[in-house]
Length: 482
Image (tube, rainbow, N blue to C red; front, side, top):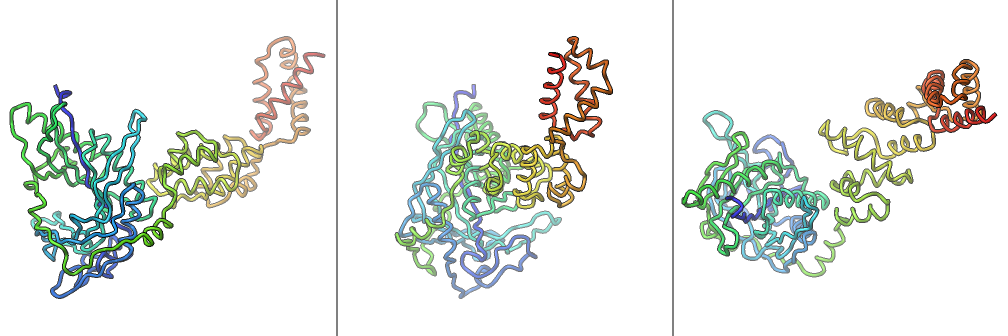
């Protein structure tokens, strides 16, 4: 029955810009400070104070616009968005409305079917953040105004998203871009990347959009999918029961896995927008745009293609390695110390990412440098140690803050790769086990495993396995032929 319906979804993504100071004053934006310590008369909205625009806010906003194929508008205007919350001391928010800094862009996502889909971006505008109300102190509500005036960009998509999965992929792409640009840390738990979803449903084939609701308070990709899926099913159930969908704002309750009504949905008229009288219009001319373009890094898609072509690694590897800029930097730094790019890719994707994910740390906090990791890989490739021993060395490198070379030297675990030494060891084993040598010559070829085991036992596992097998087979073949 529900296959008769389609969902229409648009996302409003708020990205907190990583400037050192706030949008319109010199207060610090540092997260986690003592409540109400990063404040001043400007961000507290005291009478008679005047805001002064932070130039970096404009540059970061334009960078995001360029990265998402937007037009960077030469002329944009700030507006006052009027509403009352206890954590908004001015009684209004400085934002942009009819004339934003960026408009008419798009980005592409890759769906689960490996298909490319374009999501249009209606606008990117600058605004300041409100403070934070804290409701977990009994019957009281506490207000922390440190976040007041912290610069945001709001990225508003067109209603091109058709499923919760697409919504999650779109937001992941936004997060990847802002982190590559270095304009936002993308930390959803701390609120520096937040997302509201506008959701409506209609029967397939209908042209008129259904009544939309807005879902807030989604702080993870998983919660975004759950919340949107819940709301789609809720709206379809109402329509199937012949009931009306109310236009409202909903809060997502992750503990109960359901949405809860917050208030009736506001329209733009409710905010009584009017031009901000204390700020001049923002003029971004061609010269400034060209200067901003020089700050544009190589983004994930381009870097992925380059990794495939330059390092001859599979697309799967390249996508994982370039998903996070810091991980791509780590891998690429390692390519300066080895030519075995595929082995380096494997170690980064399996061992390195395994530790990072288990320990929930950043690659920046990973204790083994890319140079030391490639040294370990080179020791495997030149026969100094086996792959098995390398895993043990890797484990010690994680805890002992030593290089592979130091650990191998201290523990004397280098492989025996000297041909004459291996030949002598093999001869000694043959002398010790003449019966097994005769049985092999007579056709019991499975005994080669017996000899390998005895040699490894005598060398304490240090014999180079590849070289050992090669010499052993040649010696046994020579004995058999004679």
